Length: 286
Image 1 (cartoon, rainbow, N blue to C red):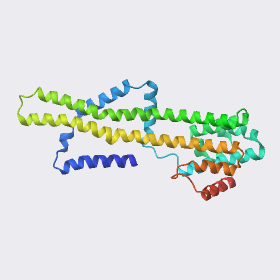
Image 2 (image 1 turned 45 degrees about the vertical axis):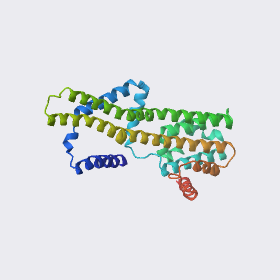
Image 3 (image 1 turned 30 degrees about the vertical axis):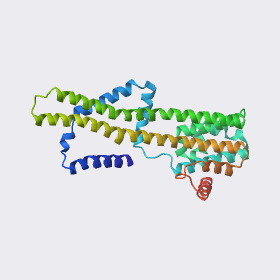
Image 4 (image 1 turned 30 degrees about the horizontal axis):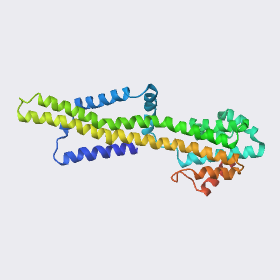
């Protein structure tokens, strides 16, 4: 929704302001200029990226218009799930959760938290490290190092679309200048025309520069910014799991381990201690 609102504000401000000054909006409709700018940008985008980067970028674009996934409710469910698992470990031993982590879709504990089951990256991260804890072959330091490396890899992979689109945004004004120069060349080759017609050709050429700057800074650049914010959110949920599991391995009770995880969340999504305690209690009563 915010993407649509922001786009309308950009378009309304730019074109509305132009119209209010007496400009003719029809003069800005230059499909050939758009073809040159858009075509050159897409060509350079394809030329400058690997197949892997192109696929990752295209796959990430729907996230721009999707609502935020990592909400306070999701984090509360995650911490309630972690609490339930750690309580079971404390009461029955690590081996007791082996069936749960081997097949979370069939687990009675995981079944109480369908939103977590719908998060494949977080679910895989959680079950993989619980499985390693069950195996008992890694100490806390080794496990922490492995978690850090995986989170870093996840973040680096997520940065590929961000960098691709950022570079595309940076190139749009330059391709706008290219389109404008082509228009100027056409104008100079038509110097025998009447001044009124030459003025039209000059105006058309200048539209290229305008469109390149508008598209680059008004639309493509903000898309890269949104993807970067979504990436940071997807990394934060892994950090929450990491801190909670490490606290448990270091001997803290389930309640304190979950509190460690709560503390690393962004303030906008972090539940209060009382909210989390109440949510965990309701989850236990289900």
